[in-house]
Length: 163
Image 1: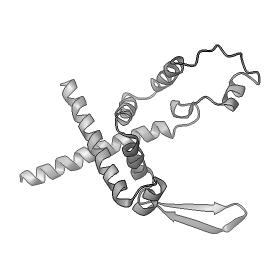
Image 2: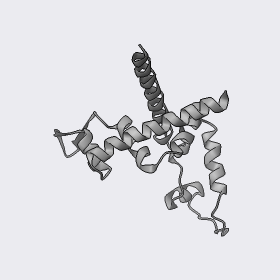
Image 3: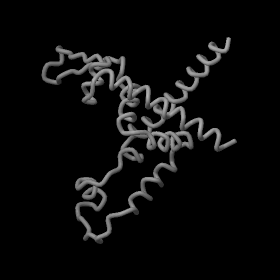
Image 4: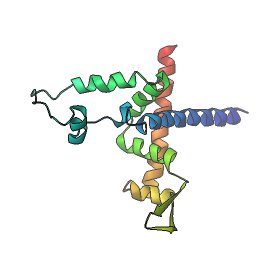
């Protein structure tokens, strides 16, 4: 009976960790008006300043961070918390769990507009995901496992902090 509860507890914790990744991906893949898509580039500045680039102030610092955090305020508390949790895990773990939730086990169909009758299917199995992340299949699977464990530990710390 204790093993069954432990298994159920592990499954619930994993489900919550996956939900955190999904919320993070919501922000990451948001529309161009949202925080996930804002960045400094020349074309963006030309659009922002209607074709006339302003003189540089010589200051390129943390004022941009405020702008990004302001945009995150428009998201739910769950989305913001998910971003904070995902920020605290390693880059490799973050990439792996995002790949797990976005691509792993799915098939992508690509159609060339010049030959629409020829479809190309890409099945995102562990080998394809590992190749995309430039690692071995074992490393990919370990990064996923470690990533979810890190997220689960962070969620436990948040619950303990709130108690």
